[in-house]
Length: 182
Image (tube, rainbow, N blue to C red; front, side, top):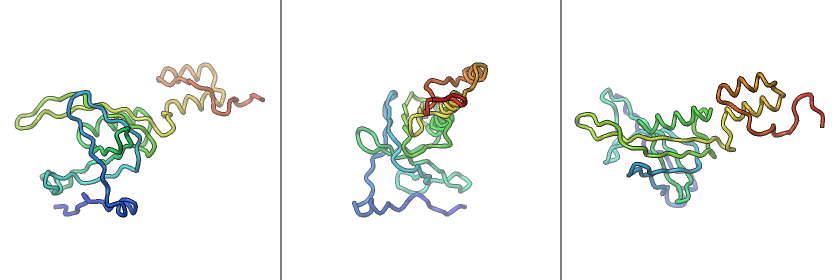
C-alpha cells in the first residue's frame, strides 16, 4: 500500500507571509455554470482527499490524483480540482489547442453541461466542456498556418493545410515571405 501523502503542498513564501493561501475552489452547481480565467500559476498534481481531508486511494492502495489549477477570474482567484470527467474535457481542450498541457498565462474556460447517467448506488456524474487558449492567444494550428504563410507556402500547400482545418488568417508577423524584398 502506498503511504505517500502529497495532499498538502507548502505555501509559497509570499503566501506564508500573508497568512496562507485563501483561494476559493470553483463550484459548478447548475448546468450552464462557467468558470473562466487566466492560469495564474503552474498547475500541480495533488492527492484527492475526502470530506475529513484524509487522502483518498483506490482499493489497491494507489493514490487518487487530481490536477489543481489556479485561475485569475473577474471574481478573484479560483481553484479548479481537475479529475474524472473534468480531466477528460480539459485534456480534449489542450489537445485541440495543440498545447502540451495547461500553461501559465493560458486561458481556460470550463462549462458544466449537465449530468451523465447515474450508476446504481452513485449520484449522476457531472459532465463538462472546456476551451483552452495558449498564452498569447494563438493555437498550434494557427501558428502552423502563419509559419506556412510566412515562408511562402504555395497555394497547394495552403489548400492542404485548409483541408486539415488549418487556415492562415493573419499575415506573417514580419510581413514578408521568403524571396520577397521590402
